[in-house]
Structure formats: C-alpha cells, structure tokens
Image (cartoon, rainbow over all chains, first blue to last red; front, side, top):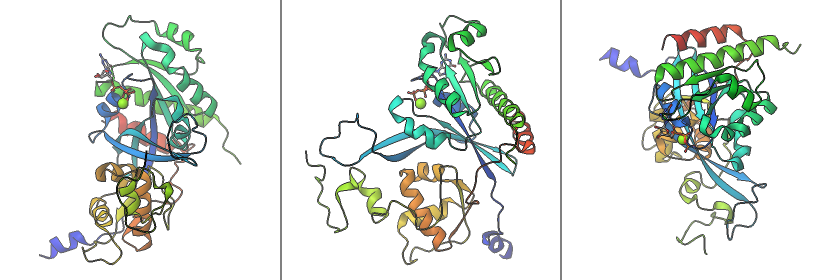
Length: 200
Length: 128
Ligand SMILES: Nc1nc2c(ncn2[C@@H]2O[C@H](COP(=O)(O)OP(=O)(O)OP(=O)(O)O)[C@@H](O)[C@H]2O)c(=O)[nH]1
Ligand SMILES: [Mg+2]
C-alpha cells in the first residue's frame, strides 16, 4: 500500500539537541538507582575503551607501551519535547578514572553529586572536581534507611559548600524525588550561566 | 602470560589490540572514524535502509542502520550492540561516509546561555 511505502521514505528529520547531565558520588551511593528512576528507557550500560599513558598504577603484565582501560558507565534518557533529549550518565566512581570524567564532563550542563551521610567523605573528590572544573552541580543527600538524618546545614558545613550551591534530600529510588533533584540542578545551572557574562 | 592465546590469522593484527579483539576486527583495526566527530551523545539517524548485500558493510553496520530508524546517541547504540563506544564511533563514521546515516551537527554542544533551552528543559521535567 502507498501509505505503508511512504512510511519508509525518510523525511529529513531535524535531530533533537542532546544535553548531558552527570550523576556522581562515591561507591554504592545510588547513582545507578537514580538514573534508572528517572530514565524513560531501562538504564543502559556502555563501555568506553580508554588509552591513557598516565595510568601507571594498573599492573598489566606484558603490555609495555599503552594502558587500555575499559570503563563502564550507566546512562539513561529523558526526552524533552521534540527539541531536546537529556542523557544522564553515572560517572565511574574510582579515582583513577578521572581522565574519563574530563571527557564526560566536557559540555555537560551540570552534575548531581549524591551523598550518603554515613560516608560523607566519599563525595569530597566529586565536589572538588566539579568546583575546579566550574561545572554547575547540586548535592543530593540520599536518604538510606538507618542513616541518622542530618540537618542539611550540617552537611553543607561538612562539605565546605558555598552557600550558592543547592543541597537537597532525595530518595534515589523514587522517580518524583529524582525529578525534583534534576529540576533543582537545571535551575541552578540556568542561574549560574545567566549571571556569567556571555563572551563577546 | 601470552595475551594472544587465540590464534589470529589476519596480518593486520598488531601488539596494541590487547584484549578487545572482536571489536578490533570489526573496525579492521581502525580506532578513528573516517568521517565525523562523535562523542557519547552525538545523535545518529538512518536516512536510507541497507540490504544485507551492501558492499563494505558488515553485520554490525547493518544493525546500526536498523537501530537508528529513530535518532539514537552513540552511547545507546553501543549499549544495544554491546560494543565499546570507540568501536561504534568507527562504524558510524563509515555509515556517515557512505550516506546511510545523518549525524547531529558536528558541534552538538548546547548553548549554555540559551534561556529558552533552560525553560524548555524545566517544563519538560515538570511534565514528567
Ligand atoms: N534505602 C535506600 N536505598 C537506596 C537508595 N538509593 C540506592 N539504594 C540502594 O543502594 C544500593 C546501591 O545503589 P546503586 O544505585 O547501585 O549505587 P551506585 O552508586 O550506582 O553504585 P556503584 O555503581 O557500585 O558505585 C542498591 O541496593 C540500592 O537499592 C535510597 O535512596 N534509599
Ligand atoms: Mg552504579
């Protein structure tokens, strides 16, 4: 049938603009859970094979010149109308993959740093990293059962966070909660970037 | 330890292939796409279909053309095909070169100062 046929002819499609958001934080803090809770697709996992001369710590017997490391990342997608599509990437947690973060952080609109109050120090590296890189970020304190509930001001103090940086409570398992965190992040990123003068 | 326990016939196989032999074979040893500059969120969409007999395309190329009926990011294609993103970039470069796919603008970075973009994203998130 004609209509069936014309379905296959591709009208030139205007591709949406892809926007990258990062989810960072220490080991087991709920990064994958958060990505899964807000994603419209089941969270996917991709592997990036990295070659890095500076990764001297890996003990790769027999490989002299280059180190290749395979880093796995979880990610999810949220379509925003026809025009934009958000991709959420969980950053690899280990410190030795920081060269990977650079690649991920390039062009990112912002980052959510997940914190667990029982192991607050685990998110120091992420806070340092995004501060240095000047990537807009918010801190989301994940409410695990059994964790003593902290006053958010206490957490802010412990992390040495600038008062301008939003800090919120969240339950990474709940979509509504994850959504609130993302809204806070996008708002923060908007405020940050509208204050910064556009380069002439 | 001998890292190359499986005998590899092809001559082009060299010392740097490491443990990722299959993807390496798929790209015939190439690590850079012939065309295009793909990052993890570059979007690709098929613009024509590819038959199994298409010269110069391997099954993975064909799978990508099928997958990208709707726009997909490099990361998604990689996840669906269970291949490293680097391999997928090379395959996408071939497809772009042969005119099977379109890729998003080579400069896909969002304009961070575009207030309209923030509004659209916030409205979209609130509507979730
Ligand atoms: N109670 C509670 N449990 C959570 C929450 N978020 C995550 N979890 C649980 O914590 C565990 C770890 O969560 P993941 O999402 O795998 O953490 P991750 O940061 O991706 O971990 P790695 O990738 O291994 O670093 C899982 O068993 C989750 O079900 C939360 O908000 N509340
Ligand atoms: Mg995880």
